[in-house]
Amino acid sequence: MSIVYLNGEYMPMEEAHISPMDRGFLFGDGIYEVVPSYAGKLVGFKPHLDRMQDGLDAIEIQLKVDQAQWREIADQLIAKNGGGNLGIYFHVSRGADSKRAHAYPENIDPTLFAFAFEIPPAPNPPKATRRPIRSLLPKICAGSVVISSPRPCSATSCITSRDMPQAIQKHCFTISTANSPKPLPATCLSSRTA
Image (cartoon, rainbow, N blue to C red; front, side):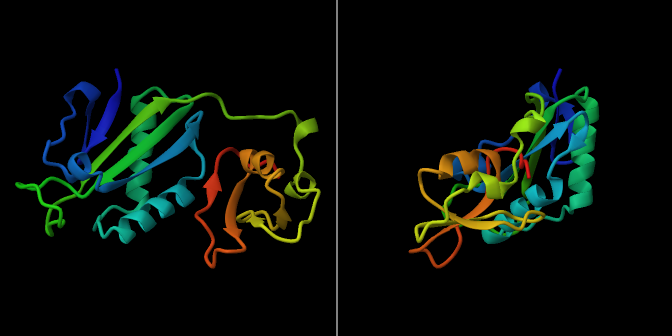
């Protein structure tokens, strides 16, 4: 049985119901985030929740839930769903209104939904294949894409598009191009090995 969180309550998934007038359902008006948990330990919790809060702020969903409360929800979902390797899915929509309108209403309560789902074990490449980012980027190029890893790594390198897929598959990066004045959002596709 899968236990979920919906608007302050834990319940079996079959009992969770969201209004068909919820703006998340009608318009996709919401933000979600997934945080991996291996053997009950959340990975990257703060950066994931910071990113979710940035998204909520950007679309002006006012939410009175802090990271400690989100962590408690995640910890409860892990415990109530047997632990192990779980992804914790958080979803916040603007909420349900009594009528459908494109302009979003004020003074409605956001819908908070979270659930846990099984994920594969954490990637753990053999030590012989673990290399610092600098060794993945052998060619310094004169132009196109700048890849810079976030903290705690400090490497910044310019790589060719031919080298990019391997680098992106194994690391988290901020990407900017010569034609783009602002960096694109950080890309996290797998665990860092540096």
